[in-house]
Amino acid sequence: MIRKAFVMQVNQDAHKEYAHRHNPIWPELEAVLKDHGAHRYAIYLDRERSLLFATVEIDSEERWNAVATTDVCQRWWKHMRDVMPSNPDNSPVSTGLEEVFYLD
Image (tube, rainbow, N blue to C red):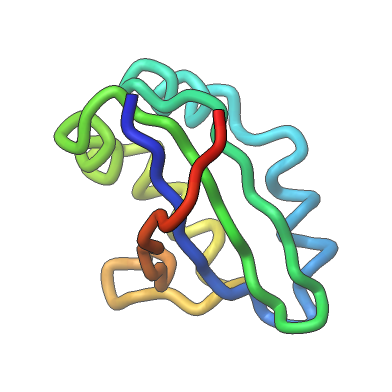
C-alpha cells in the first residue's frame, strides 16, 4: 500500500459549499476511486488558510493516475472548478507532500 498526502486550496468563501459537494460524494466517483485502488481517502480543511490537506492509500501510482482519465473524474473536476483553484484541464491545483514520519 502506498500512502499519499497532498494539499489543495479552496476559495475562502466556498468552505461550506466544498464540504456540501463531498457529502455525499457522487456514488459513481466513489466507485471509480475504489475500483482504481483508493482506500482511506480523507480531506481536511484548515479554515484559517483555506487549505485542504488530503491523504489516501493507493494500490499503485498507475491506477491512481488513471482515475484522472475517467469521464466521472473529468465531470467532477469541472463541477468543482468554481470553488477551488484549478488547472487549465480543470484538475485542482495540488501539491504532493513528502512523508517525513509515520507511526503504525
